[in-house]
Length: 401
Image 1: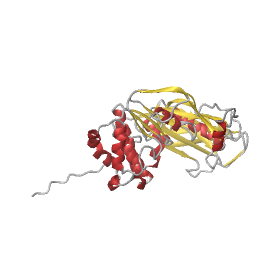
Image 2: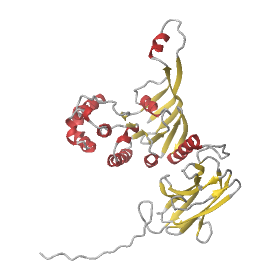
Image 3: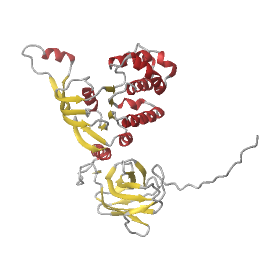
Image 4: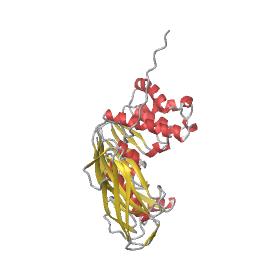
């Protein structure tokens, strides 16, 4: 497990390198500004848990991981980690560029306390996972960034860690390697390995982590389910980048936008106009949205997004995608719109997110998970959608010898 208690990290910022020397002189005046990269961060990761961390650049994510791994000392607070930590932090850390990939793997394993015999036993698996072929015996300074991180990740996960800490270095990998890493994360989780990772991929966060943390300006802004943290993060980003007017909507991450329009009612109906407790797979569903405009808007967009119980996007569309132009609206005008679609989902729970937007995609009013609904089906099916395939087949007799 990992225990982080009231962790803070202060960096002095100097305008010029010489200011550091001048400040060290007797009776010198202060020549630096204080920058708190972390402020009073407290959380706990249980054994076998996968915890994701998200946040904008400069929010303290990488500093937090470096302190947990013992690379950087905290200014205040403490970290306790119960188990051997394998870390993949910033690209370029931990390997000697003059050594070959093979030599770096063995050197890194010895630093972590693994015997040469154990490393030799797992080395073929590291080579297979990294997939860099003959470059394994070339100096790593000749590697591309993708090759480097593939080898670093392969070495880290095959050191039998009890705790795996991964920064966003995986972003440089290709799609095939990324899928391989996701499968390995899931395998490590089944083996009860504690995983702490930073990512900008919100879909990956939802897939791998049940719980997540949103870092914002050096503090923990939100800690909760991955879906709630993603909603809060998206809301904060929209508020920072797109807000052009005061909005009286609650700022808890479930609602955000410029306030040019406000969604006043959302209903999910069946074809008969009733609001059923659940939909049968394939049944027609009607998402009915009502909105009131607070400002003059030309060609607004209305849209819907269906997510499953893990917060993964299943289906989404809007009036621009469907080629529908809504025209001009004045303050006080109202919009009533319906999205009618066959509910071709597998049996589980879903949520409906709705939004009004400007033509360029900036949110006017965005309601995350405005409604929850269930889909039932007597048939079992894997995945998220129920495609009701037609099956054709024939028997082919064996050919006589």
